[in-house]
Length: 127
Image (tube, rainbow, N blue to C red):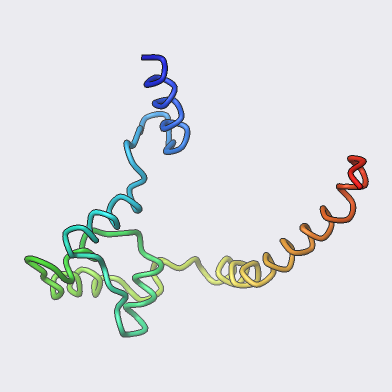
């Protein structure tokens, strides 16, 4: 009983969204694994607009209807065509910041690694 309560507490901490929502699983990972099992895993569209929508919109259920048993790819297209290509992308000032940070963060992470490599070990007394 104690082990089950401890595991439940860990799961609630891991999948925490808000105090009023307690999901049982990591939804995107769960949906992708189930879709692989039943043969309806979403495929990345071939057109530019579809690719942008696929990567920026949330994991909508219509993406899982494009292949497999009972597939209706035209339904997914109909839903996605109601939205513009860049509707899910942040407005311009934020989009520019996002692009800049996308390329700046790896450099910052590397600098942080080098800093820790040389200075943190000396501070802790590690040779």
